[in-house]
Length: 119
Image (tube, rainbow, N blue to C red):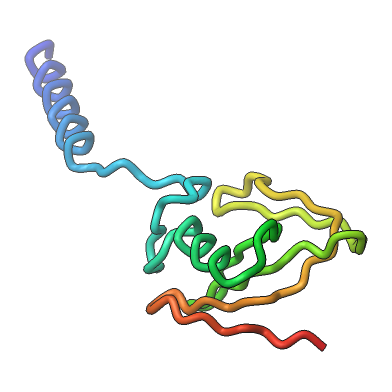
């Protein structure tokens, strides 16, 4: 019976070792430099594009939807409804009470920038 238990224990250790070696480190949804699965650009790459297009000192928020990055600019002095943004893990990473306005759209596939017309 001891031999049988040892064989099973050895088998479990081998499976654990193979699994550990074969697994890649998963990228955290909090990592702004990571290109997450299903995307072509990281949030920091999109922010770099947005900062080149908008006036210096702009306060931005990037949000990914359906292959397009929406760049929202915080509207100073305009208070809106409090909002909370969560990452893929459900952890809060942005909390805001200032109103924002979408000012740019950046296509994830090729980085093409579209200025959003404001009313």
